[in-house]
Image (tube, rainbow, N blue to C red; front, side, top):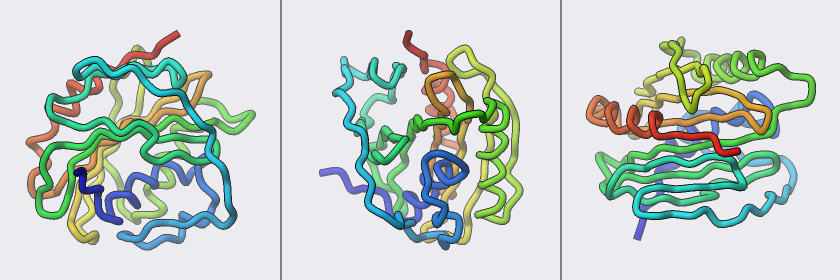
Length: 203
């Protein structure tokens, strides 16, 4: 049976949903290591089941496909919500209380917001919540220019590192994030890079 990540891991995952579209607004006040709670009930939009062949996941409804690492467990719609959904891929072993994972988030972009504004807002909310300046760079993902940031959280229990690429399309705003134990972070960089290289946007 899969042991789901600790609350700290989920809270970090939710960081990417607080800037626009995917959050209620109260998440920005959440303390590290806690799980933000919505202020009112909301019903997630049901999605169809993806096609999984060996380690290839194809999700036509969400408009992407990706090859996930050998031995990792895909959990489609791991975190559904109003206007967004998160698919998660979990590593086979828990390390120092952390289940290494990669998440793929797709969320609605507010009407009138440009792709650049969307990406800038996402990075901004990370700064505001963590009070830490992330390392920011750029790279190509799925044929799109994306912003990548990396941030370490030594104040969470257990300590973790999160790396995320953010970009936007007409369909949705995308966030592809790696969350791993801080002590073993570099051993997952190659896995994450291959995941990003295999990511494809579907028609």
